[in-house]
Image (cartoon, rainbow over all chains, first blue to last red; front, side, top):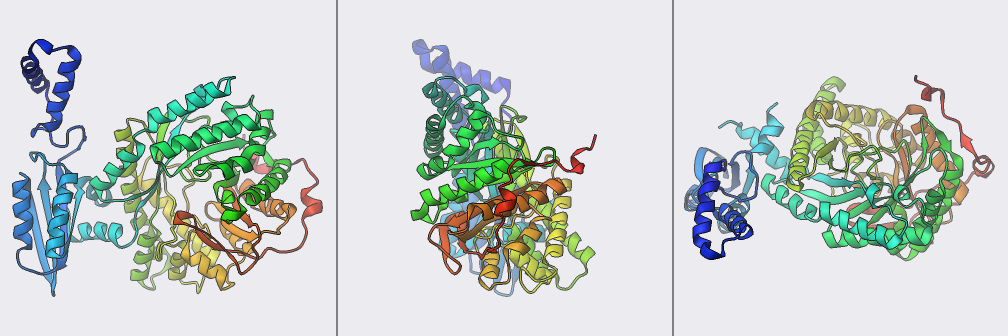
Length: 140
Length: 453
């Protein structure tokens, strides 16, 4: 999501009223920056993401509950699942999800940490990579 | 799904199994505005400037690594050749600059800082001579500083006085770092036709025609090419070339993406992608293994040079299509100590120094990370360098020599540095003398090829 001028103005007015008499240009600037960084509307703060789409790949021996554990964690993190594709080859489970993390308060780093613990519990591998790397490698 | 199942799995396989990584993101920083007649002001300016531009280089690169799931093996900085900014200084002052570079490199957490360099293909200035003389001390007293000296070019010919001087400097550096397998020599490159935007150490420097600051990226990925060739079986040469190109295209694209993003994050302009295949000592991440997969029994067998030429050419063609900012060395590297397959070939006696020299005529970058007996004379080293630079000068290409006359070691022994520098068996050197030739002095004139206007 783009940060519009209106949004910045709104945040500045909020900051001035919160700061009250202590409001100086520097203090307002600092507070607005903090708000932008923590704002759910602008995930990842200063991270400049060209799009919020992330590819999640999971594979390992098939057990019950892989899809449900991963999607539950994603929904808790307010990530949007755009597409999902899954295959079982012999005992081997492979799943690829395209997720949108634009509206998530978490950034890709946080999600990687969350998925790491899920991967350990389920004894599968889970990778999260920004979509751009696939676009660059496989699309001219 | 906008991407096929197989495409996504292919990328994961490259990064997780086939050792595909970015070898280096190197920030080039101009230090030309740091020159001052007072050495403490000069070092202070250098320290502050590097800190200002590259202070967050490592942190930013790590963030990009995580976002794209592609690891970046090294984060480096290259600077203006130090001889240019300190031309009025003597050896002691140059040493202080080396210490400053080492200090700031440690503080910002980068792996190497390169550019303790001089360009003397046509002759020395006073400052350049002083810098070169300070190299053995600089490399033995610092950890992360890398040095290079350009002694020849197609336009200027070979400065044999510089070659002779450098062979003595290499010997002295080996002696000064003898208790660590003469590691100083692994951080010292002698060049013909050095390039100004090379991101690879030890030969990197920020050339004088480069902008204030820039970010260059060097890619790796022999493991990916190796697997592709192995899986393809006995296809003919055109098909093989096509296969290598397709693979390298993807790798280069990923390299360009990573480079641009790291540059963006550091808020500096993006420079070039060096489309080199750089091996690491890890098993399977080897140029030698690619040549074997192409069909030669081992590196050194007849056909090796042709195989390497074809590999190198396909790498370049794919890279050119994949990126519009190709530069640096751009070719396959064949460093002996950093490639498990090359080490094996030397151990078995399959690969000689002479065959290695022939191979360098068709790829970048030269006799790289080659360990020779400690008693090899300076004149013999000069002869080896002169041969290598003749190849570079005549063919209008970059060639380099990074040779380690390991003090106290002889054929059968090893030098072992660990990490990316790896370990190298000592290679035998011909005992015929080159003394009367190299000590004539003066310059080998520029070849007819230099007159292109």
